[in-house]
Image 1 (cartoon, one colour):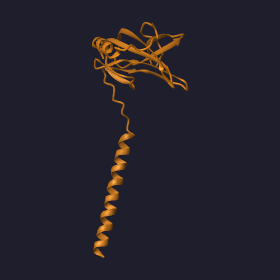
Image 2 (spheres, helix red, strand yellow):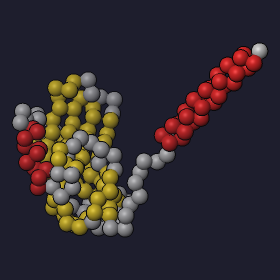
Image 3 (cartoon, helix red, strand yellow):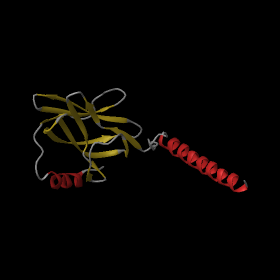
Image 4 (cartoon, one colour):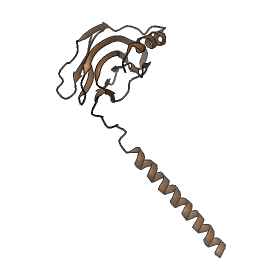
Length: 167
């Protein structure tokens, strides 16, 4: 009888430990991963538009001076910046339709502000700009480029361009 109670106690305690572990893990996963913005930093948001048939992105193509894909908003140190932006557009079910354009911005970005990339596409031509998120005021030049098929030596080109980037 004592062995049965001991066995049942071990099963219940194991179940409780597992349950508590799951609660702890799920609680941590619901916490915000958004880092706090320092006083000397600005927040930068990339552009993403997923529609039923078309996907459009415009994003900082470099992070820590290396090529990167689209990322959620990040914080960067304020000051003078050299930013490379990749605009990408393709039909959802046809990856071979992907077209891209690269543009470069050199501008001053102030601490405590939120910025975002925006874009407009018409007939294979993309216009890209950077704006303040809250006011939608355009704070950069509006750059125009033709959307083209990605080149074969994309990684080599991107590595070279990202060495010039300040982020």
